[in-house]
Amino acid sequence: MNPVARVQRAMIAYFAGDVRRINHFLKVYGFAKAIGALEGLEESEQLTLEIAALTHDIGIRESERKHHSAAGEYQQIEGPPEARKLLTAQGIDPGIVERVCWLIAHHHTYAEIRGADYRILVEADFLVNIHEDGLTPAAVAQVERAVFRTAAGIEFLHRLYPHDALKAIPDA
Image (tube, rainbow, N blue to C red; front, side, top):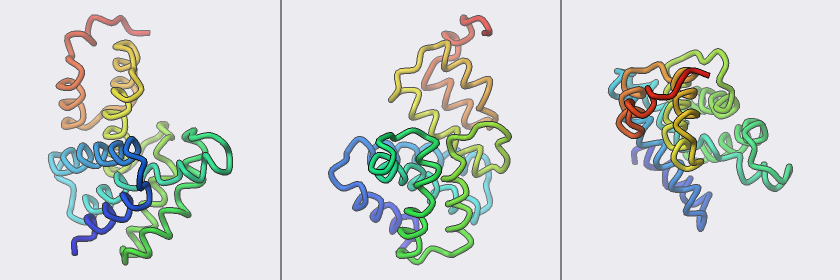
């Protein structure tokens, strides 16, 4: 069976009954998969990106249990051990497991984003979070300036949140 499909199934089982969180990671996965393909990632980097997109928020449950918060800083701490267990159980290559765990440990850190997989994961997460969190047009414009760099990510951002509306917002 395809390793991405195995991880997807395992993540749905992990978050069983939590439709909001399952829908979130599936949407992030969809954007990440498309952006990675449109940006021409190599096969191994695309695989890593897709698995990271599915598992990026795996630390939420432990963050809420241990810290009584789903804040990004706690997800970055609690996520890698949970991901390592889940991915190892699914027979994912150890090198991919390590990179995915690193991406999870940094996916709420936006300074010095390096690596196409990291960049695309952050952009895909923002494409979904903008809507889920109800960001204002001014906030969307700020996120675009601060985070988005890939042509495909910018295109999706503009299609989801029309650019003309964002252009009308003065720089902060």
